[in-house]
Length: 399
Ligand SMILES: C[S@@+](CC[C@H](N)C(=O)[O-])C[C@H]1O[C@@H](n2cnc3c(N)ncnc32)[C@H](O)[C@@H]1O
View 1 (cartoon, rainbow, N blue to C red):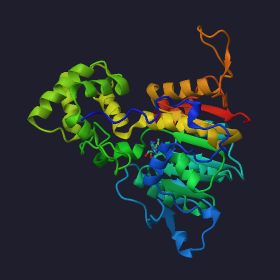
View 2 (view 1 turned 90 degrees about the horizontal axis):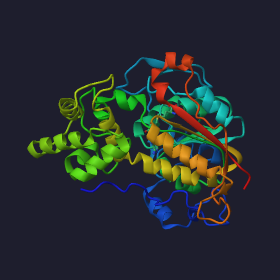
View 3 (view 1 turned 90 degrees about the vertical axis):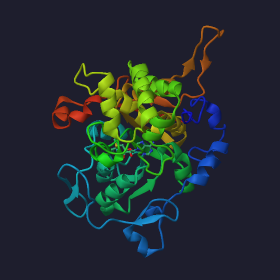
View 4 (view 1 turned 30 degrees about the vertical axis):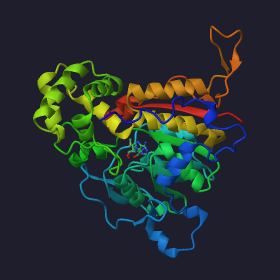
């Protein structure tokens, strides 16, 4: 089997994606949009009004796919319960994920009453909740059903200003367009997996816990990590480990995978982790399977392609003065964000072969800061997972 398409756009920064004169926030006429429309569904927006009282207890998961809110918490989370402050007083919900760089997100997005903010990675709902607490309206997305259920329960007190929709943030223009949104005051994506993904052995993300080698954030996704490991050709597997894991031992690991799968399919996380440990003995604190697992996760979920598509589409949706914040957790993602923001904030472009500099048609932003924001010592003492988090932010220039 060949790898999934690396990106739906050959050049995500191509201004051609957004035909001149197209209304900011509207859906483009390109073929890729109609492809997505067929597969995506949009839910009911509480603040747009619904005549059906029965929907009070529902959370939109897709057009015609409202799900009943869970009555009690959900099974299977590790960690203790969280105290969640809400309009109805503090409540306990099971631990799901501790949001990172909270102060930095709030500083970047400046949530306030009347503002409409898009959170493309709802997760446990921590960032969204802080935005709601400051009076903003939030429309959120996540591709993981469990995250939507958890956050829907956590944030049910904000139903008049909050809506959660199932989907991949790469498809947000279709989803928001169908819902009638034409402009946003803020956008946030906090990419990667949640603590819940790593804690839940059955999701197959952890090399420390035995589970099916799955790694899909959207469990209806077309391909699992096991499919990749057991069916991709040698060259494609090596490419993935090089490109998405920057794994220096890629060749050695792939050779071991090929030898193993010729005998028996590699079906579980520990089966793969132990195989890698055998050929790459541990030489640092990091588990030898860390980079391979990262690479497989990125390929399974097409994470970089989703990020590129999101970054290319975002400028059309931000109102002038609107802010976009992106939190990434490894250098590969941060590099994509850094390059995109750099390109999208340059007024002039120059090349040695050009007689003179040209105006950049993709200049949409002002950088909020040159360097990314990182966790403070105080945050790190409370949440060591924040160590690799980097936040980059931009502000939309007037059109
Ligand atoms: C790091 S967590 C977000 C945590 C969240 N900010 C909070 O405060 O709890 C990442 C979440 O984004 C979701 N996710 C990752 N990539 C996504 C994508 N391309 N589209 C939609 N959701 C995505 C994951 O399912 C996960 O729930």
